[in-house]
Image 1: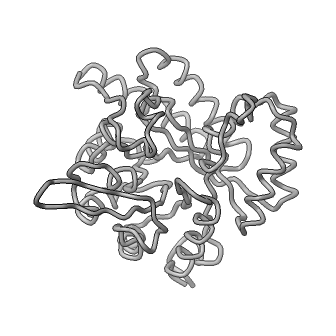
Image 2: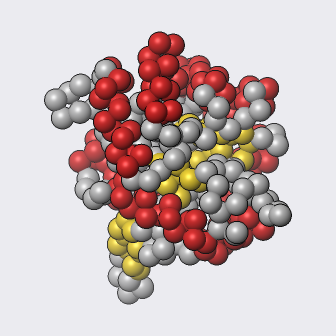
Length: 309
């Protein structure tokens, strides 16, 4: 009998939808497409061997679908054998200076929708929209993005709003994971731990998306040191990896997306560390560049190989 929540074969490992754009080249929004168009994309996900899906809202905001449209979406996922263990949001910060109130209401809808589709987790972040410079860059993380302000009132507002969402999620039996992302209040291991402790709810924890940090072209804390700090607080986890080369003479840093088993983060060690401290949530495979779906499928298989039997 395993001491873990699932066996390696049954552990939910979802496909992210970040390889698929939310706006098509002809300007149409995926949000407004007929269900037959959604099915084409989701068929690709199923054909890659995935049985779990996170309908990442950079692709499709299922929390904003009319009930009949949501039913259409769920009918497709069921027909393809895809379940939804979690829903992730992207760039919809509850402290956005222009849209914070709107995004807070949206995050509440995400929680309700997650419960209605049988998900166990939702993921929120405090990172803002891509800047014009980031949109032009080959890799957006090589340009500075929006930063959370060094303002205690805004920090406390963030804590309060995540606590509000956490209580709502708890009423529905859901967990919340907060995505680590540079230049936010949860952009370092120490900051993520402090923020989580300030929210102080057992169902709110950290999404240890260390790939968001090791890809930066600047000094960052070693991934193993970060994991040691955040591992006790982990919830739903976005996993991806990068190669990272540092020149100690010039200080230059070069990074590039990589398969999980080939990048700088040793996920065999990171996942075992998390499991030893009670991690019991799903994984979400992400990858930028190239055929991201195929790399994510290979990453899924790698995770299954290293999970305990």
